[in-house]
Image (tube, rainbow, N blue to C red):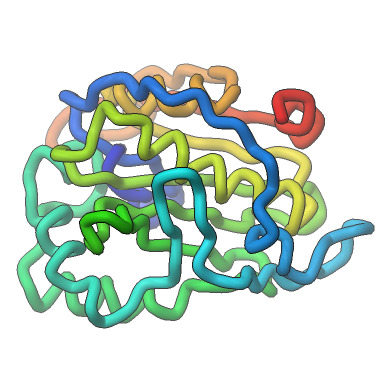
Length: 235
């Protein structure tokens, strides 16, 4: 279950990813809404709005953009590692599996229907390489609920990149889609990802004990959440 990737829904949840060795992020993120974040069709009153960002979305150190065929090598380098998939529903993938995964991600660049998700490649411009990915899924129109997730290559853990990138999709969820509450779910042993969620201002709302038989053993799950007014107050 997951600073690695959203857990694939075979068990109905999307879980935040990362290896158990993920170091705590050290970055304090300040959101000043760069113009590129605000070019979506906004949810001024909560209707069935379309979120179609003007890519790339640029932060102080990162560039977030839709997946492309050229991301294959970097995606494979991340998801073929056992330490990355330790808390994911998936196992380390082979090349053929990763091509199928990439094909799906390439189509996940906008939201106009409940159940869809945005999946964005996170690029370090000075390296011109994808170092991870972030996700926002639209869970409910009626209840204005969403979920975030992220996966980063272990070589880039502990530098605040996950926090910086995840802040972008939280902003999209609240400011552009008009969500009221966004959650993150993860394996209770995934301490690195839990620290990222806490740095984003998300509170731990639940600790489910042995709620899932996961990869041959019983596992606990944590639920984190933040409300729109809480996010606005922080930024």
